[in-house]
Length: 407
Image 1 (cartoon, rainbow, N blue to C red):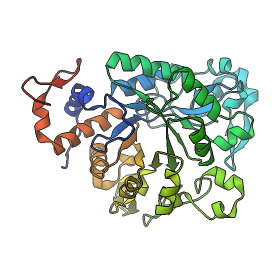
Image 2 (image 1 turned 45 degrees about the horizontal axis):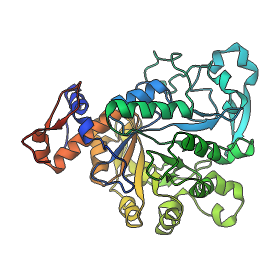
Image 3 (image 1 turned 90 degrees about the horizontal axis):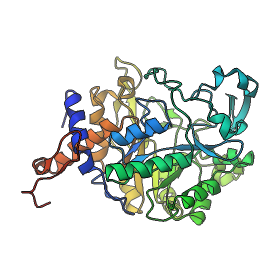
Image 4 (image 1 turned 180 degrees about the vertical axis):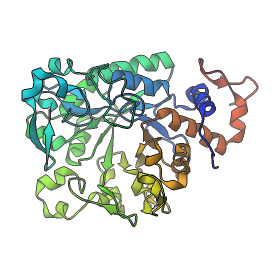
C-alpha cells in the first residue's frame, strides 16, 4: 500500500478507532499483530518533552505507553528529563539565581557543559519550566509546563487509564546508570521503590524498564519482576549503510567503564548477533534497537535535507532472530518531519510505520503517536479488510463492535 498523502481525515479515523485497536491489557507475551505505540518523551513532536501535558497529549492521541527518561535530583528524586544536563530542555539558563550552577561534567566519558539535575533539589527543579529542544518544532509552549516526577507520571497514567477505559503503561528509561552511581545517586533501587509504592512492582504491571547499559539490567532482574528491555544504540549510519560505532555511542558505557578486554572488544552490534541475543534473553525480555539495525539506508545523493537524500536497504533479519529466542522488539524513533524520512517513504511518515509493522515489529517509539496509531489502523485493515465494517463510533466517543458482528 502506498499513500500519496497523509491528511486530516486519517487523523480523524485514528481518533475514532484507536480505543478499539489499542490493547486493553498488556499481556506478558505481546503479539506482533498489534504493535504497541509508545509516546516517545510524551508527545515530543507537539509539546516540550517529558511534561505531564505532553504525556497526556500522547495518551489522547492513542499511545499505549508513555516514556519517561529518568534522572536524579540532588535529593534523590527521580524526574523526567532526557539527560542529566537540563540546559536544552528547561529554561534554567534564563534563571539568574542558578547562573553559578553552570559547569562541565564528564558523562559516559564525554565532557558536557551546562546545568545538571543532580545539582538541584526537587524544589528547585519545580521552579523551572520545560522548553522544546528541537529548534524546528513548535516553540510557543516553552515556559508553560513543570518538570514532573516519576510519581506524578504514574498518577497520570493511572488516572488516564480509568478515564479512557484502557490500560496506559509507563516505559521508564534509566539514564546513564554508571554516571548516576558514580555521583552517589543510583536510580535503580529508587525506581523499584516508586513502582512498589504504586503497586506496580509485579510481572503483570503496565511497566517496561529500559536501559542502554547492561549491568544495571542484570541487577534489576533480581530487584523486580517487571519486564526489561536492552536498548541498542549506534552513533550514525555510514554512507554505505553500515553502522558507525564512534564513542560514546560505541557500546554500553558500563562495558567501557569495566575495563574488561572482552567487553571492550565488543560494540552495541554484538547485542544483535545470535550470541548477543541469547545473552540478552538471560536477563531481559526484549531489545530496543535503533531502527537502522532493522532497516538501514545508503547515501543516494538525492535532493532534499537529511534522511530525504538517502535510499533504503533491504531489511535485516533482526526481528525474526530476536523472536526466535523469545525477545520482543521495540524500535525508535519515528518522526514526521520530511528531513527525518528516507526518500523511499515519499515524504509520508505512514509509509515508514507500515514497513515496520509488516516486518513484525512489536512496538514503536514515536514523537507523533497519532500518526503511529493511524498507520496501525491501516495495518490492521490491511490484514483484515472486513474489520472496518464492524466498527462504529465517533471522534468524541469510544469505537465499538457493531451488533451484527460476531467479534
